[in-house]
Amino acid sequence: MNQDPMRVQWYPGHMTKTRRALEQIIPMADAVCEILDARIPRASHNPDFDRLAPQLPRLIVLNRVDQASPAATSLWRSDFRTRGVPVIETDCKNGAGIRDFAPAVRSLLAEKLARNEQKGQAGRAVRLIVVGIPNVGKSSLINRLTGRRAAKAEDRPGVTRTGQWYTLEGGIELYDTPGMLWPKIEDPDAGLRLAFTGAVRDDILDVEELASRLLLSLAVHAPDALGSRYKLDLSALPHESIADGYALLETAAKKRGFLISGGDADTERMSRILLDEFRGGKLGRITLETPEG
Image (tube, rainbow, N blue to C red):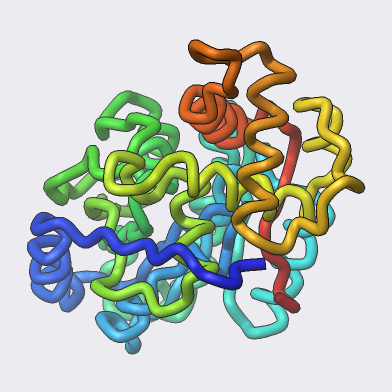
């Protein structure tokens, strides 16, 4: 699909500070809780977290499952568990899966808790670092777990800029970290998926090219939803080049009545609408990658 791939890179200065802060906090932690976007579990995994804390056990939280394909989420759940990685599924908007968090932590750290009890420290808290890429829902998860609006949460990347400890009932402490990408995204398809889902700031990208490439991806992963919502005939194009994606974008704009002077398609407006509707789940529950590819 990406014959001439769009290169997506975004690593502002606060992410460097986040990495340094993590290096200092990790020795204080018992485990890592990594939040992944259920629509892109592979692309939303930051490999730097593996390098920063290879010695710590990890709990995976697949967030935004309400926007992901249930069948694909089931495949990812099985894949993680086959690899011996504990995983829970959450939707922080309505609180689904939140009750699974504390039991999963106690299971992950069962040996640690047993040792504490043997030492007469049964009430000693266990500490987890909550990590993830920007806009994946870390602060929303912590707000749900604490039962209050403890951490600032917005639907845009780069909101949380400083770390903070939070205490939950049952002897669990969480350290919320700012969203962090890695300095160089080598895989162009992973970079695109990060951009599609809003992990990268839109203002550093060509929004029309991004939308054109999203249309090409949706034509593969969700053709029925795409054709239905935007009244597109997906059989008319091969969907192999960026030009095909732009042709779909023009058609979608005209179908919506988004026109500029002279009757040309307002593709910029259509691009922003497409990205907003995809990210808001208005096209349905869509996953852009599976464990197989």
